[in-house]
Amino acid sequence: MSYKLTYSTMFDPPPELHTRFESALARVRAGLGRSHGHHIDGRDVSGAVKYSQASPIDRELVLGEFADATAGEVGAAVAAAKRAYPAWRRASVAERCALLRRVAALIEERVYEIAAAVALEVGKNRMEALGEVQETADFFSLYCDDYERGNFDHALPDDPLTTHRSHNRSVMKPYGVWAVIAPFNFPFALAGGPVAAALVTGNTVVLKGATDTPWSARLLADAIRDAGLPPGVFNAVNGSGTGAGVALSGHPEIAGITFTGSHAVGMQMAQRYAAGPTPRPCIAEMGGKNAVIVTARADLERAALGITRSAFGMGGQKCSALSRIYVDGRIADALIERLVAEAGRIRIGDPTRREHWLGPVINGTAWRRYARAVESLRSNGATLHVGGEQLKAGELGRGWFVAPTLAEAPLHDALWREELFLPLAMLARVSDRDAAMALANESTLGLTAGFYGGADETEWFFDNIEAGVTYANRPQGATTGAWPGYQPFGGWKGSGTTGKGIASSYYLALYQREQSQTTVE
Image (cartoon, rainbow, N blue to C red; front, side, top):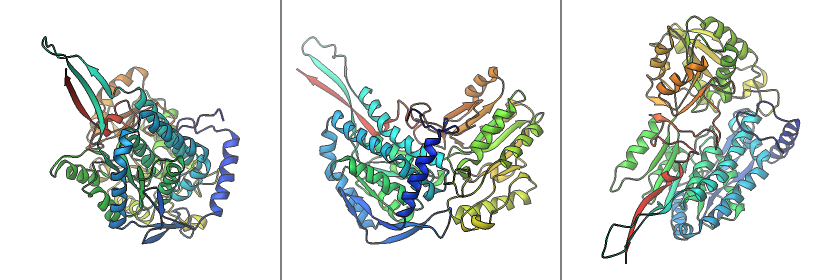
């Protein structure tokens, strides 16, 4: 179809999109409960240990039975990737890209079925799920384009010698076996993106999906398997972070890793990879405590729409989600009134249904964390302008549903600094934009940030904000909605280890190391 699905365009889809999604959802629901294994050395492996995974929409809805990797199975996957590495790195760029573009094509062919599975597994609405799956296909295509036009093997000037000819080159080469550990919130895109980057640059891969979202990792493995990649080039295992995750990240044959998750775990991993007999690359994307600044000159209708979408979209379970609002005191009441009205229009329920924009949080741990956060806010004197309830009535009681919450809280509250991963935004009134900027930059994290104000104030915002992904006066989302090829996505400060963005012109170089070559005739 001519309609191009991105996170910015998903708000006005054609009717055909809904018809095709609902048809795919019916087919996917008919196949629930099946058993799914690992993918190791070109074969599907049933696994020695299994666990059942239910949907966060309905705890009685069993999605399937999934293999839980033992240390031995992780080791087998790493060994397969090591065996496959020499041939894969020697394959031509054209050969690798032909296979990876086939992966992209298969994902696009299956976009509705995969999105239906993602919606059931994560609890995100149909548009968010479709966006994620299409984004993954775009990663595979974009990284092939980037690698083909990238300057990763180029001649340098000859040495200025009169007695000999001395030729110089700079060549970027892959590291070896690359591990990818993906999070639950974007289990397809944040697995597929780094997998594509590692593969196109000549590394082989072992992927571990999140414990809560093993199905997405399995569906990605199916697309890569069916594209015909050689055995061992790509391997996928499921399991817990403390089990399979530790076994994979700690394996001595892993040459580099991409991890997406919490700041605490990411920092531990980065420190571990910097230590040892040789340092190894660790690309860690570690979340955010993202802020928006609203000045007295802001378009409040646009601000309210963008803030609502970024604070409450997907239940705040995005590393880019908005959680801190700093608004000029002169227009604070007007903004709050609009935010309350926007929140009141949110339809909550089974997110696979067209009428529901907001689904559940991922699991009981998140559901209980929401209750503790709300109680903490109330006990510390916060005003809850909207929300604050766990939703238990009717069908909602079978899932992990909570109400979107806007809390005006004193600035000393500890929750201003804690990444909650919930549909909970905190608001503070400030005297002017400089006071707002100082508060926004106080965080040790610096992933995304937003701004609403006068057109002549945007350069001030971009010049001063300490964040890697920034948006000004954006109604589609104050801090969320980056798309490959349009907005590189990466954090500053404690939000990332590289200072480079996903899908940027600098990203593929992170998966390679440079070799200087001099040949004298």
